[in-house]
Image 1: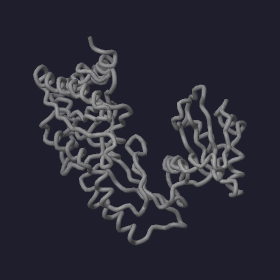
Image 2: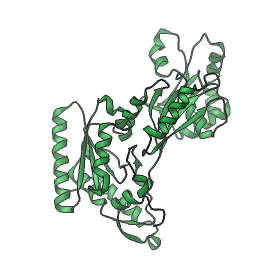
Image 3: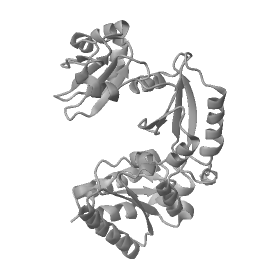
Image 4: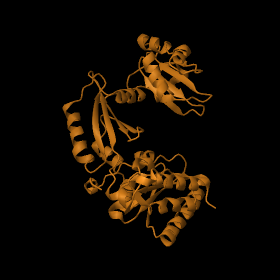
Length: 372
């Protein structure tokens, strides 16, 4: 008996294929092959944030050039320079505010479980709070807001004090009473360090869907960035997918619990074996350990919240949702492998299936066919 998660994935997959059925003409190419040879990759951006007070030096400009031409050669990523004091898109401005780049005060909205729902920085008027409300959407009971600023900074403290419950309510954020905290008070030392504005210039690695995967100081060594963006596990994953040797690859993420790792590995091995035997699908495997410093950015990229876990990846690195706990079953894994054998259709939206991982892959983009 397959789990409800398995059924829901199968229904979603078939729904994507059957959408607008009369016009959804199936190709004679399988999904895994289309993903590898036709679908374009999602791109990552490494934002380099600076301002007029801290302009980029000649050496830093040269570093950006090297990043583009060397570190990011054959990688689905690029560097974008953003000047806080210059003009930019609203989306970029809001992104920088969410990273704390606008300085004190820092407004952090937290869910009942303590997870950060949104963060904005700098002085906020009603318009700024309304935009925050757009990002937050419906709030659940237990949502709270913390406003942080150093009391000794008169301008910042005044701006923090103006973020009141009434100001939030006027912007549509109701039933949330903000707590204004002095970052210089000993009791707030930990929060102050956690949400302090970043020292500029700084790098922020952002996924195609807007998730911040990492932050790096401007003096980071190019070698460190090259390792972060092309770690051993990423290289292994590229090798398993390259040239279509495997229709799909399972990234096995292990934790500290050896017994749990062993049980999960048995499930994984059986699923790979059965996929080959029953479905005639070749499945690759890549292992990575939580806590491996070299794989920190890769692990964040995989979006694994519980371990041990298996992340199905296919095509040029398209990542499906991680399977862990009760969801990590042979049936679920085989469903992901079997989906690769479905015929591609003209209405199948690759972005609906998942986000492409950041991978360095020589010549891969040359395979993308403009005309289908």
